Amino acid sequence: MSEVVNKGDQTIIRPGTDVVASMAETFKAELVSAIDASQGELIIDLAGVEMVDSVGIGVIISAHNTLHQSGRKLEVINVSTDVYSLFATMRLNRRFTVAQAG
Image (cartoon, rainbow, N blue to C red; front, side, top):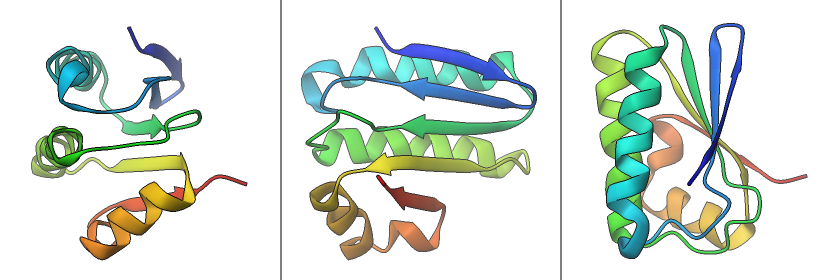
């Protein structure tokens, strides 16, 4: 279960565990719920997350696409070096903000 924090017009979601296939459905449901419950920006805080697999990437892209359709933004923050490399290789850092930890 992800931690969800609402700060003004931002909603921050912290999965706290690797974003992989085994937890993807639950995480996707949490993202959809957060998107539906707010009108502002969505921030996924990947502090403590060491791995994001292809299914996890798909969930994050889906959230970005949903937000983008309504003129809203997605940010992914506190990304480990390895996970950042994955986002950069897929050029996802050009579609939405991806910020490394530190």
